[in-house]
Image (tube, rainbow, N blue to C red; front, side, top):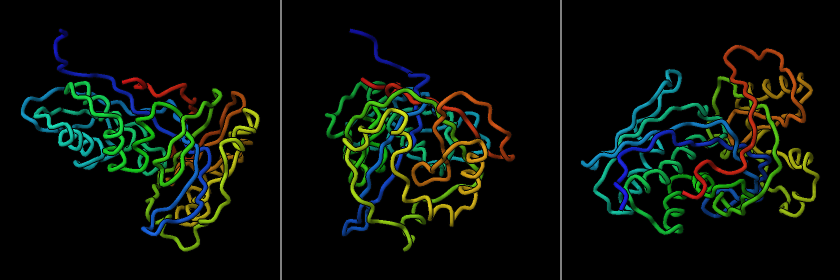
Amino acid sequence: MSAPLKAIYEVAAPAKLNLFLHINGRRADGYHLLQSVFMLIDWCDTLHFELRSDGRIQRSDIGTPDQVLPAEDLAVRAARALQRASGTTLGADIWLEKRIPSQAGMGGGSSDAASCLLALQRLWAVQLPPGKLQEIALGLGADVPFFLGGSHAWVEGIGEQLTPLALPAARFVVVKPPAGLPTDAIFRAPELKRDTETATIQGFAANSSGRIYGFGHNDLQPVAQTLCPQVGQSLDWLSMQGLEGRMTGSGSAVFAHLPHEMELAAAPGGWQVRKCGNLEAHPLAGW
């Protein structure tokens, strides 16, 4: 029998881009019904875990002076939820090296939570049924189940209906201006379009490989540009590079498909600009 693990290092938590985001309606409880394609990219946070025998969950930050993370972030909440569901008396020290910007629409906090669930199952030697783990993930946030899935996905419902999807390898440029964008403000806006015609996976897949990266639109973008002018400024900057950009998710980051390698002009000070590739699979797929 192998010795129990005492630590797990270099656990990746990748960001995602929404290739499009359509709002098709609204449920009676106020949740919006959406369609999207979530794509994993190689912009990642990194987590480290060490076993504790006293049941405490403690998180520290590594090299994130410009991002002050709350003590009860999604990673900590994920750890405590797994503790309760599994009945373990063990705990963990969690170190989070935060690289994915916050309030960007890239799912950084949700990805951290999913990687935390996967890593701590291994560290604590517990194994919940997949359905139970998905239930915990959805209770943490609508995007968390996607990051447990291990692949790109066609997403529907409120984010809980996932269909694995293969996407061709491609490069992108992602731009995150300094300003953030709170999700609630966008979804509360009366002018938000909530009646986009339903799309199909077949219609998405029928486009050629290059064209799928221009499929659809982001219904949140017009409201976001009103609330956060830097979103529009970022899109204008991409246009100056000859690239067609759009917002990802409900945050302030925007992105564009890079059909070929190219030099980019200098961006305004304080903006994060990064060239990224999509992943073939989540780094923890199969855990």
